[in-house]
Amino acid sequence: MSELAELFAATGVPAAQVARVTSRLGDSAAARLREDPWRLLLVPGVGPGQADGFARRVLGPEATPGDERRCRALVTHLLMNAARAGHTATPLPDVLAELAKLRVPDPPRAVEAALDEAAVMAFIEEPDEAEDFDDMADFGAAGAPDGEPPEPPQTLAPARYGLAEEAVAEGVVRLAATAEPLLDEPALEAAPAGPAGGHGAAVTAAVRYGVSVVTGSPADVEPAITALAGAAAAGGRRVAVATATALATAAVTVPAGTTVEPLHRLLDAREVEGGIAFARGEQAPLDFDLVIVQEASALDVELAAALVEACADGTHLVLCGDPAVLPPVGPGRVLADLAESETVPVVSVNAAEDPATGAEGGAVRRLAAAVGRGELPEVDSPEREVVVVAASGDGEAVHRAVQLVIDSIPRALGIPVEDVQVVTPAWSGDAGAAALNRALKDRLNPGPGEHAGFDVGDRVVVYGALAQAPTGETGVVTAADERELEVAFAAGPVTVPVPLLPRLRHGWAITAAQAHGTRWPAVVAVLPAEAAGQLSRPMVVTAFTRARRHLSVVQAAGPALARAVGSPDTPGSRRRTRLVGLLRG
Image (cartoon, rainbow, N blue to C red):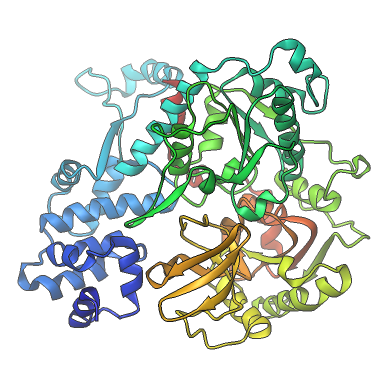
């Protein structure tokens, strides 16, 4: 029995948690937890009550609400919870209020302790000049009683995300300042899809500026990437296209000699204690003149920081993505913040929604575009590119989804089961991804799940990034024993040791957030009744645009779907980030 297993057995923690805690805290987890049991809060899903109970069993009467280790850990826990919701910064008053609710006797001192440990960073947010002018105009009536201007707001962030956000801003400024045109004007005019072509503005921005953004639906952006790579390659430039997953690389059409790889592979990801790191960076930069990132809306702030740091001075970076889809799984909203900052060129390649154009995915494309505008039209798809299946409840939704995957789509459209992906809003619930996976496994690969819940033949999805496979990558288990699983991914086989198995989940059905960045020949989008409150316009756009050839919509949400599509995100749902201000400087 391992040292951590012995500690958990003595303190009543389920043995099943050993792998998950080891994955997060490393091989020295037992020693670290004996020294500071509140480190358990670093493991996602562990709450303050659980950590307090564990600490009492480890420390006995010494475990008190005012223990500095507890107070410090709670600050980090609150900020990491905010990061899991997408925020890279949290207002200081919000943190102090939550600490008081958790019986921390001196919240400001707890924040100071967390800052001293350097796991947390504090920032003073300077308002924009226009906002500052408005505030000063009202200062005589609403200012402080002593005539002093109000203190600028302060925010806190986990150090890893605060530093990453600053690295993104510094990298963007550096690339913009060091860029030289990739092509001269005659070469640009002569390049495929040059300024007179359909993607001329995107090509021109990519050639002339160090950093640029290209927005549009996946079906519109893919030909733009072809044009960008073609123009640069025709001028003798070294080009790389970075995709979200290895599965997504198959859809990229570029000239011979162009490198097309998942971003994780391009940056040379390596497994380290508690996560992954990238071998490519400032000391070992990428050797390309132009780097194009497909579906960059899936870039969280840490991955974006690793990317810009790996781009040498003079490299041109183009981030392509759809502003209508969900933000990334991790914290930040890099693509949206870059566009909002107005510090880099932003080019839209949205095509006219006209089926006569012959563009890929006519009915899917038109439906997704309408949803992006807040509309939910009747589906007109006689060729069955889009099919809507009504379900009276979540149980029927699961039944219909299974029927579509294993019978209707393969039989009617000739798309094999392995090319069909089920997408749903949430993991839990009667028609969530977990329930759908159970039903699909029962039909497609029944078995006891004798290897940490998995059997040979199971489809899996990467839930937490592996060095060899990024989040959202899907594969199939090909071998298993008591020590490891072997999974066949699109880029090749990967051996996953038991301690890393918590980073995998069954993958016949995945959440829309997990699907972000990859597309499949056929998608079954399940919209459950129970998850009606989780529906949003970006979630629906994301689910619908994952389909290349066919989209089946299993609709159990009733009128809630139209309400969600018709309602833009509320101000409170916006992610709190600092990147726009950092870029504007």
